[in-house]
Every structure is written in C-alpha cells, then in structure tokens.
Image 1: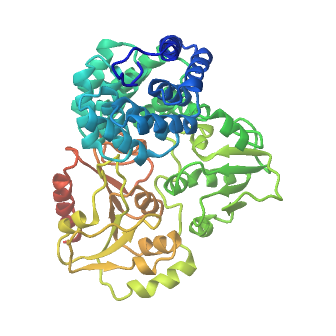
Image 2: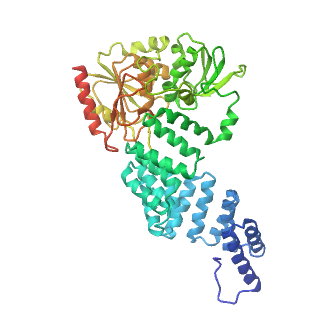
Length: 533
C-alpha cells in the first residue's frame, strides 16, 4: 500500500482516486498485467508525483520487465521521500544487481536488514550477493535467517546448501538439498546441487542418479546433460560421458553458432590432407592435457592449426614432431579450413576409452632448446635431488581456498633436498605466510613465460604441486609428478585412485577431510624420504 502519511484530515477526492487506482494497479501487477499496472502507476504519478507506493511499485515493475536503470531512478525517488522503508531498499538492491553493481546491491540489502532484521527477501538476496562476493560464511548466516521466516522456500534451502558447499561442508549441504526435495521432489536446482554435493563426497554413482532424475523432468536441459557428462567421465564411463559433454554447446547455442565458421569434425570424415582448425575453448591446462589429440590429428595426415591462449604458443613450438601443425594465438585471416573442432570434442571424436588413451606412457611435450639454454645457468649450481614445488593463486570455491599453499608444502619438505619454486605464471603470486626452507630457490622473477617454466621442470627430479596447470605441464614433459588434490577435484583425476590413466608418471594424493592437508603432507614427506634416501 501507499506509504504516504495521513495528516488527520479527510483525504481529498484526488487522493481517494489515487488510492483506488493504486489498489487496482497492485492487483494488475500481481496478476501479471504489466501494461495495465504501468499505466495506472503513471496516472497516479501524473497527479501525485510524490506518491511513494506508485514510485516504489513502478520501480519494481521496471526491473521485472528489464529496465533496471528506470527502476533505480524511481526507487531512489521513493527512498528520498521515505528512507525507512526496508522493502524499497531491498528492491533497489535487485535493480542494482541487474545493472551489475554487486557491491551497491549488497549495501542496499544490508540497509534493508538494518531497518528490518527479519526481512526475508533482503536476507535471502544479501546472502546471494555475499556468496557471489566470496563471503560464504555470511551468506550461510543470511540464508539460515531467511529460512526462519520462510521454512518452505526451496530457493532459500538450495542456496543455504550452496553456501555450505562453498565452505566445503558437503554432508551438511546434502541435508538442505534433501529438505528442498522433500518439499518439491522434482526441483531441478535441488537435484543438480545434490549431485554436486555427492560428487564432492566421491559418491559419483548417486550423483548420476540425481542427474538422471532431473533429466526425466527436463530431458532437454543442457546444463544437466553437461554435468552428467562430467560425472560419467569422473567414473571412467567415457562412452557415455563424451557425448553428454557435447551438450555444453547448447548452453549458449547462439554464441557457439556465431563462432563456428567451418564444418564440425567429430571423427567421421577422412581428414588426410584436410585443413582443420582446433579451437582451445578451455584454459592452458586443458590445452596441454589435450595437445596429444592435436598430434593424433597430424598422424592422420591432417594439416592442423592449433588456436591457443595468448602467450602460450612458444610452449608447444618444440613439440610438433615435424608434423604439419601450426600453433597460433589468433586465427589466421588468410586461411580457409575444411573443418574445425573444439579441443574438448576431440576425445569423443577419437573414441577415447580408459584403455585407449594415447601418450599416457610417454612425454609428448619437449622443452624449447632456447629456453633450456637460458634456464640452465640458474640451475647448474643446485645439487640434486631437485624438487619442484608448484603453486598458483587461489583456486577458491568462493571463500575457501581448496589448493594447498606453498607455505604448507614447505613445512612438509625434509632437509637435504633442494626445492625449486614453480609459480603458475598466469596468476598473482601468493604470500609465503612466513614459512621457509633452507633449500628453497625462487626463480619466478626470471621466468618470462610457460616455455621457461617447462625448461625448469625438465631439469628437475620430481614435481610436487597442488596446481592443475603445473601438474599437466610436468606430467606431459614426462616428469615424475605428485599432485595434491582437495576433496572435490577436476573430473580428469576421477575418483578413488592414486594414479591417472592420462599420465603414467603422475601420482595422486587425495585430501580426506575438507580443508585439512596434514595427512596428505605427512604422506608426501614420508614418500620423499623413501625416494631420495
């Protein structure tokens, strides 16, 4: 209703008419009759431009119909007249979120909660923004407070579970998703989220059952198919996983279609003598991991152009094995192609199974000779054994860093070995947090690119890392590599195994308690002593 304040006198005829129109406008608004509601709100404001209810609700209507700029203007006018309305501040936050102003939205929701501590919508929305900002603990508190007001709101339950997943508390998250499913058994979001929690707990078979239940309700949901594909790959069911993963192109089909200029090659047509463009849709780690398929295309006689991220082409230049392969960082404008294929589609195109993975038992990357010559003086006076410690920036899931830090790695290293810091060059360096080691050598400032990093790794005896890119790089170079995995890790490392079908030289150390690396690091320290003494 209108927030206009009575002054004790009988309302004028104009005010009574405005109030009648406002009641009609709100009813139309609630019934989805947006054009009628908008017309009535504007009629009210034509005669009473300070009518708070019309300003407020017309603002809501505008962000609901895709005009957040106009919504913000109207809500600001309403708040200027009556600044203590929590709902106006909450709706202002909604408009700001649509405008991409996440911090501004947070402040508006926060103001609404200050004005009314049990305002369920503001609590819920502040929690969503807090989660987006990486403040998972606060998000959980807000969702739990909103749940007190709306115990049967499945969105609140789903997001509370999401906050718990961000905090690496999957068992507790499951309880929230199950509550949502008890209220709405075919809740797609709850089934999808429950599957993620189950994958976190290494319960992949149950996760697949959740995806299947959701797909029974929405068989054309591309997000569910894509997630099912990833879950199948985690369990080694490549025959089902690769085709399901192809649904990823339907997540944004317009963008995918716009980017595709040539016929798609998925393994059916002969490609000997054909020009084929391989697009690296993923990050550099994936480009390294799946580079084997670029070599396999060349083995079939294809003339391959490999499109990789900026600054990474030098890494692959010395590993082309004399094949007809060009590695580029922009698609050549003067070249026409017979086919193109996304990098992550190549495993399916080649019919990859666990047993047929190529180059698993051999190095398929080689350090560049020029990089090795430049790096050699840095290492020549460092005695063996030389152990590389790979680390990167935050690989956080919201507010929780799932990657073991360099400082934690240092505490697990015995004396008597030389340690070479291997920073992931595409991220900002992380602080050492006071940890040190007498054998630590840091050449990060001298490394220009990942070709330099590969040259360093090639001259080490062992690489230990929690960073996926470093692990792919070291293992592709054929270097003994120990990868320290959090409870929830990438699909490539699968479930419940300490080796990898992708790399014979890779050993996996799995965290058993979220956030606790002590058992992993104790085992690493023990294994180093056994290996080098």
